[in-house]
Image 1 (cartoon, rainbow, N blue to C red):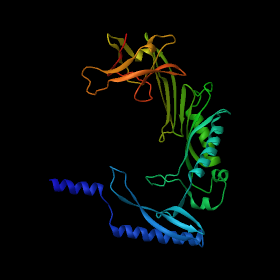
Image 2 (image 1 turned 135 degrees about the horizontal axis):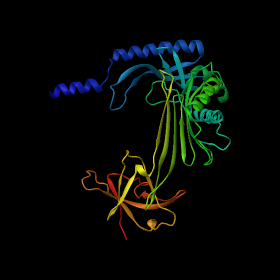
Image 3 (image 1 turned 90 degrees about the vertical axis):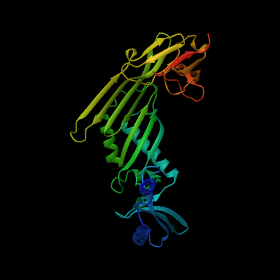
Image 4 (image 1 turned 30 degrees about the vertical axis):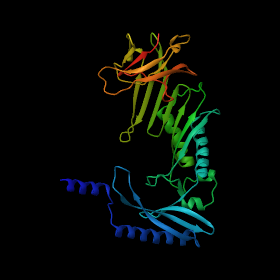
Length: 348
């Protein structure tokens, strides 16, 4: 039985191809790349070619793919490339600076299409072609790179490249309302981006209390607020709206969740406070009221009797833009109430 188990494990996690198959894949890649160079970049030298073996660590076996990677030399310049031998598509790896420039310009176009005004801040940008490589190299179509187009021209090359997947994150002023960003609004803006710039874009936008995540298939809006309790208050997501497009019917499904004091029960005990969530758990960050005495005292998250995990965590108060927040001392994170622990006061 042990031998059979080991053989099964080796078959599941080991190489799922022969050396002969790998050599054949390399020869095919070399031949296709040489032919491509003769047509597209005469005089360039093929330096190396290596078949790409996919291995999702701990899950999949080693699988031989139809991709090859390698290096070519054009004059004094070396270039890393990827070739999909199933279709002949060639990709050139790009520097981080090039992709950052594409992200910055694409972010400006997306902000304009969404109507974010003039005070937005781009907090994250990713433009990335997924060619089926686990390591996700930054690549662009080789012919587009060789064309010498500027960053702006690359983003406007609607007919000269595959649609460019892109995602962006923004911070807008606190008084910029995000509640009006619906799925219809998202589709209108994202259709403009696809037709004008060839970008398949998604975007997350945040202000002080609201967030909206927009894509062609979904618009997800949330609003945070305070829920007032007798001894302290908690910051939570009090409103959620999710609109989702059904690809088969073309209809939009909408779901709204509202939360308030009735969704959270906090009871005073001799040790401190116990918590329950009658309508399902949701994150509730602990804050003190203005002029409260609570920040003068020390607190700890105690394991309730019968709970298996040992979770006695000391807490400390931290002043934030929203008031005094109760935080874990071993990590920079505000304490969330739990239905499995007691928020206990450790001094008088």
